[in-house]
Length: 304
Image (cartoon, rainbow, N blue to C red):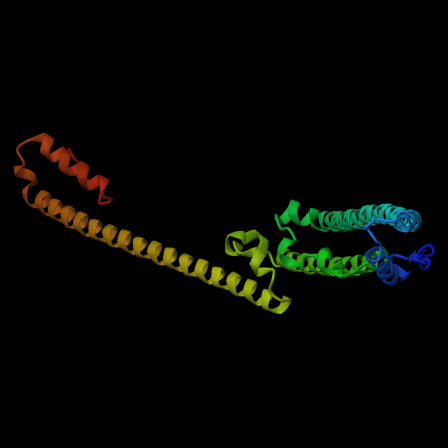
């Protein structure tokens, strides 16, 4: 009678994978044992050996099941570990995504607030500088300075400190440009007022564009237009003077012509009276002729 199957000890150690196992050798031994079991039972020894084989097989089954449970237990611990790790990972991921969105949204919100505050500062300065210009001259400063671009100034910057520095720098540069523009325009308009150019605003319908010229070019253009206007007015006055002179000459010619005709009439009348006074038949004709002579600055004839 053969002894109980001498199976090697089954060892399975799992560390995320099968770290150590003699399962292939164990399998070969079991297969060899099972293949050699006698299934032809005709004698007592055959039945006795079958009982021993059954016991050995039961022990083998128990051994395999026990080791299987051990392996599963190790697998379960790995499953629990991975489940725990997945939970922690998801918790970390969720917090990371929340923080990423928060960082992005808050930084954008802060950027917008900084830009808005800077634009408000510029608007207040601009309103102060151009209040007099608008009220008196209807001039605003929009066309006379480079507008600030705070977004461009902060592009690529990460820290709030660097954003503040960039905005302050852009604000300083733009404010300085705006102040210089206001001073330049005020100086030009004051010069125009002193030279009475503002009394002739019809000459400067393009004043806003004209004010963009540098000071010397600006003065030259203003003086040229004033000079051309003065020359035009003098030419107009000369035309009027010549027209009035021509009218006076014409009136004098008409007066001289009328006096000449009148003198001829008086002379003819005097000659007629001297020659025909005695023969004038009616008193009315004689009186009419005398009245004509008396009213044309001639001699005072007696009409009797």
